[in-house]
Amino acid sequence: MNTPNVKQGEAGQPVTDYHGYGATDLYAVEEHFGDVAAFKALVDEAHAVGLKIILDMVANHVGPDHPWVTDPPTPTWFNGTAASHLANTWQTWTLADPHATDEIRASTLKGWFANVLPDLNQDDPEVARYLIQNTLWWCAMSGIDAIRQDTWSYVPRTFWRAWMAAIKKEYPTMRVVGEVFDGDPTVLAFFEGTRPKYDGVATGIDALFDFPLAFPLRRAFGGGGSLREVAQMLGRDHLYENPNQLVTFFDNHDISRLMHDPAATPEGLRLAYTFLLTARGTPLLYYGDEIAMPGGDDPDNRRDFPGGWPGDARDAFTAAGRTPAEQATWSHVHTLLALRASRPELANAPMQMLVETDSVLAYRRGATVVVLNNGKGDAEVVLPSGIGARDALGRCAPGRADGAQVRIKVPARSGCVF
Image 1 (cartoon, helix red, strand yellow):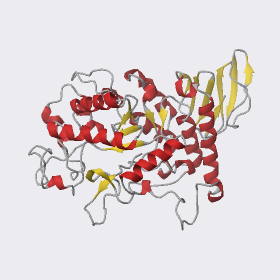
Image 2 (cartoon, one colour; image 1 turned 180 degrees about the vertical axis):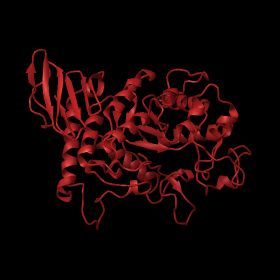
Image 3 (tube, one colour; image 1 turned 30 degrees about the vertical axis):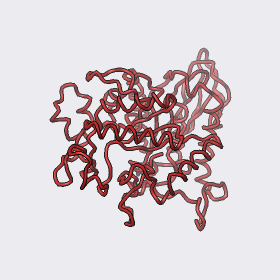
């Protein structure tokens, strides 16, 4: 999902834009992946086995080697030129600030990403028309099911409103998730799509990535920090139109992997997965985390998964190719995914907090109760009576009745699902 498939780099030249965000032809597939026909075949084959395809798109910028950089179709095709342009300062909060001036917002909306990726000017009607038509072409040509739109916050919201309207008119079931890389829930709430904000714009976007929750999850489960911080962030859900639509995660392609954190352990990673797959939101699993892959800053966080190609030393797609430690994490994730699939309340029911401390978090979703112990020692957790006797993860013994309460012993760095 997080790799645009469009052509990168100059023809016949080595591709340096390994990340896929330096487009040089928005109507061609990157030659390392094949061609347009191969991509259409991939979508068809995925659909045949019950999978859906989310295509990563970028409307904010193209690559520095795109022919437009030296020969733009209109004088206002880009915000600035290669010789003279603003650098994007990534001050996303200025866009949500009703008091900010256009001058304050300029570097965020008109700056060149990383000071190198040419920033498209969506206020130019020809640019807007081109990008909308290009998106509709990819949808029609390929049959994709959804779009992940990169750098959502760096594009004028009036363009997104028109872009979303065009998509929904032609493809009403097409879903779009946007990237707003900011840890402030008030900023994320500003970019949700159904309600007009202070600027009078409702973009219509379906979902956003939950960066505000991702950072406390990392600190808690990767660094052994406080679960109370996670609970406090969830307590800000009243800011959102629909927090269950947010896409939750703890790793992605732009940050070092959880297992790279100095205090990270496989137990902490598995506990993070227990939360991710039982808490509110739509969970995103980043490839390789299911076997506890390490990975530092970009590009190390995008290292190859072991296996899948002829000549690979081992194939971690199979149990025989995984180490015992990798298999333990894989089995844990597999169990949680099967549990989530079998209990619809884990996707739909409201989340009711039962216990919030620095080391323990317990919550109810429908008829399911989840208890997490992030501490270094066993914890006795007191819960209301009426929870089931069997822990679906096999970590906790049945609770001990104590009047109108139940006392449950939870091992260190473990989670239980009753």
